[in-house]
Amino acid sequence: MFTIIDAGARSGRKGLLLSSLTLAMAISSSSVAMAACTGTGAGAAFSPLLPFATGAQVNSLVSAINTANTAFLTQSTAFVSAPGNPAPNQEGGGIWTRGIGGEVTTKSTSTTSNISILNVALPGEVSCSNETSLNFAGVQVGADIARLNWNGWNVHLGSSVGYLGARAKDNSSAGPLNPLGGTFQDTLQVPFAGFYVAATKGGFFVDGQIRADFFQNSLSDPIVSGLFSQKLDARGLSLTGNIGYNYQMANNWFIEPSAGIVFSKVQVDPLNVSGTLVLGTGLTLPGQLRINDINSQLGRLSVRTGTTINSGNMIWQPFAIASVYHEFNGAVTSSFSDTGFPILGSSGTISSTNIGTYGQFGLGIAGQVAGTGLLGYLRGDYRTGDNINGYSINGGLRYQFSPEVIASAPLYTKAAKAPILATAPYNWTGFYVGGSFGMLNGRTDWTATAFGTSTNPRFAGALGGGQVGYDYQTGKWVFGIEGNLNATNAHGARDCPTGVFFTCETDVRWIGTATGRAGYALTDRSLWYARAGVAFGDLKITTTCNTGPGNPLALVGCGDNTSRSRVGWTIGAGSEFAIARDWTVRTETNYFDMGSSRYDLPSAGAIDVRQSGFITTVGVNYRFAPGPVVAAKY
Image: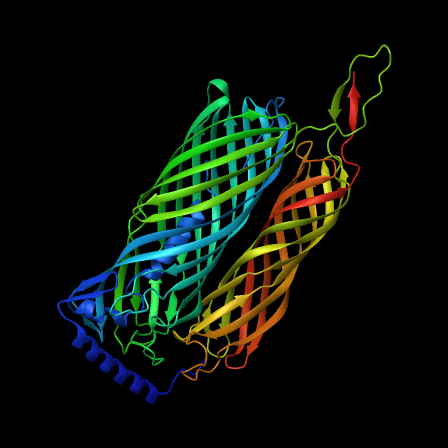
């Protein structure tokens, strides 16, 4: 599919490898020490030939996963609330958002063993202490529908979407054999989406969430590993549960113990590595890194205490919180092999420790505008432990639906008794316009027709846009049409089938749908619906060379790309809730399939690309509709 390098060049590289081995033997002894690394035997002597022997890259990914799992984890998976004294079986619902930013530094110990060079097993191992700093910021948006005072329980069902951006850097100190110190960096985006359920009764609360996370990494380590903004994708599924109780004490004080646990599993794609030996800039060998599934069981115990202050127009609740977290899972394992270069016979296994136990301490304040459904909070947290320390700032806003008087004040007659205002079911008929935020994720399947080879880059990214539509209600049934258009930064990458020097990448910049929808007004203010129709968007494919700028190996196909507009079909489902006379919030998930289209790349020829995926959004609509009618009952 692509031209690599000629036989003469390969012969020259092998000679360079043998010279490098001689140099490594000359500087080795029974014990080898590098910056933050110690080792024994020939395995330690030759470990500098393996790009990931220090384990810094694995520690960076583990740090990002831990941050994604805990960044928005306070005492619950979602930001829910309810009116103080809801009527029996009262409808409820709301929309919320929260943001976070901070920095965290993690440490791990990585042990590289089972080292082979030229298919010769070498005794000994190398152990390195890694330190990674991670700066991050993110946003999460959610919406839910609730049944309040249902036999004393308030039950919320909702979904959320979000996006976390981060930059990780290896902070290993410099030493005689690595005078530049840590050289690895990772820029990543983590779009995510999930569903949650929460229930409260009195001071008791419990909730659970299932969430999908997509880790889109861009790795740079040109000096040691030969990585030049190389893309690496991973995807995970997490299950979170929390439980707690809010004890009210004298003088408006409270104390709130709680506990939680997060189970997560992350699958990481293989990473092709050029190394620096073939580039003529160093000693590390080309090959492939495979990180085994990263499993996490992170437990939490917390105590929060504070007081409630009513200042008239505002109700304030300052609080302090202390938590302890513990990672129950053990080491993360990975392996490096000479995939594509069996003549080198290089391999090794890497085991990296996890974060262990740490504490987190925070101060914050929550507030509500009295007599309204608008509330929010702001908190700062500091975490510290043997293997982790850092800080974060976290804040959120929520609008909670409360029954409202929509019509003007009723007129009274002399003999009339005071009326009871009863709100009729919401009227969904009319035009609407709105905006949405969410996540796009999916998969592409490439087949090179001339060679019969294939690969399957997955893609994911944040998504935002708008929608316009019209609904017509008859009885409890609602029928309508809608069109929407969204911009996205969805990206995906996976190793090409032609060798370690190439990565196959996909990009989506926009996507839209035009559908009909049919729904049922299950309750007075909620609509549950299905939709189906046409999906359309763009898809760009690119073959990227992993050897960096300048193409020192004179590879053919570096940067080849082409894009096409795609048309397919979509089907989905969602729910919508009227939080005010003219405003509704909704959550929606759609599956789309763009079928297969043929792309032509100059070096590879015809490539058939099939594309499918999911669009998950939380949105707000403004409805040009009469809304509910308020009737006076006497």
